[in-house]
Image 1 (cartoon, rainbow, N blue to C red):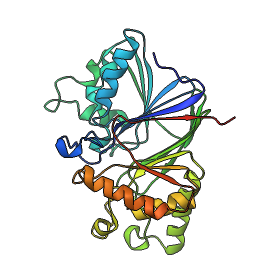
Image 2: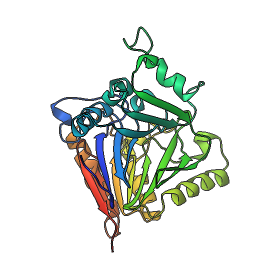
Image 3: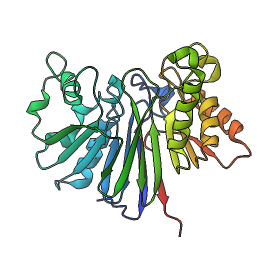
Length: 297
């Protein structure tokens, strides 16, 4: 069994936005939708349950080989590409395992109802209440809480519906996860310029100084001009905000389903040009990639 008591290990299981995109053109970065695993301080924390959670579940079952698995799943929001893999999460079907699902209110109903809805007939053959695993679903009421010794902070972000980003502070480093987010704009949200500036400053402070920022970078600048208000980020703005926030490592995430590996390579090269001369390191999240951070002593 893997153990990482003195560091922080982040594994990308799904990095795509909107819909899964399997095929020869997406082999390098992957086609599964959003799912990131964080291991630190004895905790297994999973960020979102897109289709990437299926291979994660299979890997956990093989690793633990019959031993009990304890997982905390943080849901950023209940759009389909962030929950559609949950019915296929193998550990949830074993009663010896504990699966704790945390998130804010689902679309018009509670989080539990939203997750269960996608498993109702005729959409899925097994209802959530038929799952033999110990699945506990809790709606969060506050924006700061603990998962064991890991401190978690949440913040509302600019995306249709109730959507949050998370910041995890571990003994091995800090990770911020904002999978769906668009900069606030006056003409888009109906805010005054003062309110827009305030919201954007709050986001900058939320991610300030993190060791690793995983964030929505779905569009390039040309694409973004025709997608304003869709709730997704532009690479140019993402890099600017990361530098302002003194982020150490930026991981472009939530890759557009229309972008093949070559297109993401180009966006990554552009982002690195924008960050040239700064301390910011820029990467494009790739399915299967493992990032290990350790405390400097």
